[in-house]
Image (spheres, rainbow, N blue to C red):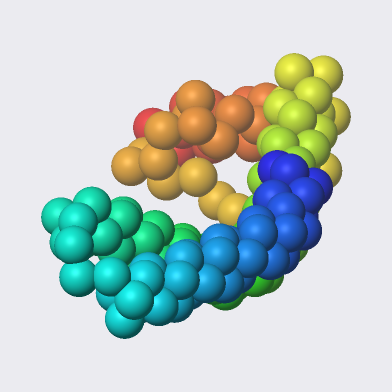
Length: 148
């Protein structure tokens, strides 16, 4: 995505140069029509149509230049934001992968029944399934029968 945007960013400069040529051509045409106005008074409708077309082309080319200048600035900002987003996304992926790795390690320990000695004492309010520690469960059961 970044490469594609960078390629488009390079194309903007070429398009801007082309639009500047269009502006120059439209201005030249307008000047030519102005000179024709000075020489001829007949056939004004044709000159008006020609001048209208030239002015339209001029404003279209100017609009394109403004749009391309805006898109160039937008591309610069967008590329920077995507790069920053990529860094943030990489950090997030690292955190998630570490959490998954830790979860899988703890899950494997519980499945193999190889939990390190835990100093926590289970109360009756805690669910044994959530904190399944076989030794602790056996100890709790033994204490329960002993004190009853």
